[in-house]
Image (tube, rainbow over all chains, first blue to last red; front, top):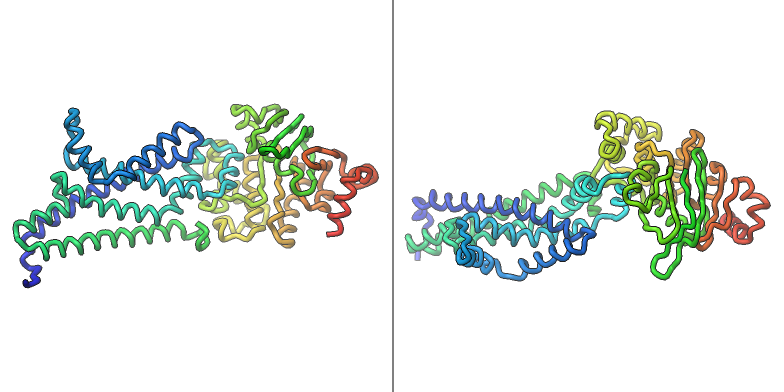
Length: 223
Length: 243
């Protein structure tokens, strides 16, 4: 067999469309899981036992079920009880919910790692709880969490390939189509492999830059 | 006035404060002495509401710190300086100092930052105003910590072993600022191991032993016959002086 990438030339626009869809879904899902993760992370460190419990149950459920099963449940299961959501929305929501569980864990450990004395200083200065959370807890926890959050988000990008199983022609879905049309799975999946590697590598470089930027004033290893 | 009456506090089985009565009036500098574990820091932490008290009552200008509604008013009236500084690591010196005035007292940010710089100038840190805590020495951090407490224009300054984490040189940096504040009439509750310094700035000395206030005397009386008449105080002072 001859390794010939040129046969893919005319499929590149189609593959790029898929890549664009992947990018859109991942961007929205990263935002979604960050928002969810912050809320749930805050709940898990809150003083209320009820909020704590609810948050812990959510995390336990979604971390312990294969993503593809969650996705099938949302996409094929929910219509049975009259809830119809399109494939893209389902994909983004499912990724956000699953990613949110992991994100909240990272945020939670970031919050727990904060020196309690710093929070006490904020309390005695009369700051309200919500202000302490916004101005002190969140910024410190996020700075400490950038790298582990990066791993979670990279995992999210990799997991997004599973969205191809619910008719969504993102990068992996498009590649499957091209592979079956051209009968050249080796070349197609080779390109796919490189594309994902490039995407996640770019993200990890961005994360590294962000980490260094946000922690530029901290001592090495202090945060 | 800060008024502490019948204060009890235990951590599990350990009783740390066992019926403490203490009053601090405007303009006084009260040093709280006692060996480690005598409950000095816990006393401060009860006054600023960081510890829930088990029994008794603490009021700051009449506001009961055990009532959540009144605690915020009480906290506006007192400022705390901590042993380990507890600066906000993600904020510059100026931002550390200006945060509470902006958020709690609703001072316009520009004005709060100008005042923060003035405070920093008064403690000799003009050129470190935009440094982050990790870029400051211990003594510098504590001076920022003092400015942060002062920025709220508190009626009372609570100082919790503020020099214990500092070397002698940095200690003297910080103590000279406190001496200046005391001279300027700032009311202070000063928990410390710096006996000689406490003697030089305090109007009164309170001595805690195993959670009980066994002496509450004007400074000169404490360091003369009256204090020495108490065996525990005499023992403590002779030990500290030997060190």
